[in-house]
Amino acid sequence: MSLRKLDVVIVGAGFSGLFLLHKLRSSGFSVAVIEKADQLGGTWHWNRYPGARCDIPSLQYSYQFDEDLQQDWNWSEKYSAQPEILEYLNHVADRFDLKKDIEFNAEVISARFNEEKSLWEIKTSQGEIETKFCVMATGCLSAPNTPDFKGLDDFEGQLLHTGKWPQTQVDFTDESVAIIGTGSSSIQSIPVIAEQAKHLYVFQRTANYSIPSNNGPMDPEQEAEVKSRYPEFRKENWENGFGIAGMAIEEMAVEDDEQGRKEKFNHHWENEGLGFLGAYADLMLDKEANEMAASFARNKVKEIVKDAEVAELLSPKFTIGCKRLCVDSGYFEAFNRDNVTLIDLNTNPINCITSKGLMAGQEEYSVDSLILATGFDAMTGALTRIDIRGRKGISLKDQWKDGAKSYLGLGISNFPNLFTVTGPGSPSVLSNMVPSLELHVQWISQCIEWMRDNNKKVIESTKAVEEEWMTLVNEVADLTVYKSCNSWYNGSNIDEKAKEFLPFIGVPPYTEKITEVAEQNYQGFVFDKTN
Ligand code: N01
Image (cartoon, rainbow, N blue to C red; front, side):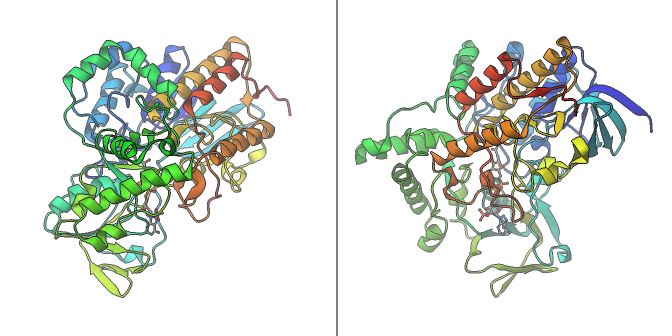
């Protein structure tokens, strides 16, 4: 196998990798994207389960780096479905001629920093590359979590995971189906699968909050209005704590009267999806305010679900928004169907998976298909599952075993010239991902250009700045209710993972911070360290 030499290797051909390729190539760097799948799309390639769609409005979940692109592209629905997002990404790749520099079916096996040469040696399933910079555009929710259920290998039916759904059509007609987990992926797929399957068994460990999407065709007037002022509309994203336009509200729930709250919550329930949490400014800051929203949402479940026992089981008990909020199209309604059964894993734990199905409590459920909707090793899994070795052969997995530390979610000490897009310590999953990743792509590209123009060979973060930064990440989270439950935001969905809060809350202060760092010649980072 021949050794290729490049300026930058980008790992992953999703939203981030595609834009990085375009940006860095336009700046004159030699670049390749290494992609494990046989096609581009990242999240939107792998998560093609029935009902998969984005729960951020389409007009906001799209690139903003090219005005012609955002004017030309038309989304068909308020919330885009997975096939349309994949089509959009293919359109972008064709429009900017990106595919010729993407190596498909190539999995990164290892990445080692050669300290003598100050180069990264990347080994992929297709060959070896030597590169000055390595950018991990591997996504925050891309390493599927498959719990270690006893007997899982014994199952003789169709075994599926929502996070790595087959490309071929899966048809559940006349089948008995079991789905484990009730997070976003499950909540989106249950109403669709319930329509096809003979019977659907839903195995729930924790009831989840979900807001109706009220999805529908794109309103042409709204689309025209947004397109007439797209830059200004995008600016509203940047001014909001979560990077989502229309959520900047200042009133406090605790200061409103009961009638006012009822009207406001109703309006947001019916119109805002994830923006339900933006009904008042104090919902994620104050437990009392949060409980007002939570209790409203629980009552909605009881209004929708006819069987009172099932409604009670489906009513979440924790702080609303503390686990990632879900947005659905007919989730709670699906439990009114005769062919859908809810099983509470707290009273009937899964004992084992059998050749025919699964044993929960004393009962065996025979099924044709078993779906694991059990989520991801979020934010760090896609990085620690690759053998990445920095200075002195230190492995990233070892360095992060007691918690992931990163400066700004962009750089990691001991790992020079390695950048992460939307890494731990950045708003990432607590923001609108597309603008957030665009911000990182712009920052990383400018940094690499600046280094070229200023004869700097190696950049790295230090232990001190990342300790300080991750302390701030956690101090900010302490001002909110985000830490009050088990969630993948704090690693508690994966047994062996360090339990720490990883996203930075607050898009505007974060944006200000990384802009200031760049303006001050990458303050906090160290260049051309000699030992
Ligand atoms: O995963 P999850 P997901 N036994 O981790 C359960 C994004 N997303 O794939 O809560 C039994 O949320 C687990 O139970 P518990 C979005 O950010 C975006 O659904 O840990 N159950 C939970 O119910 C989302 O948040 C879109 O008690 C087990 C479920 O599995 C993120 O992806 C669409 C278990 C996992 O839920 C992840 O969502 C879809 C076990 N051993 C997803 N282990 C968009 O619209 C886990 N569970 C962009």
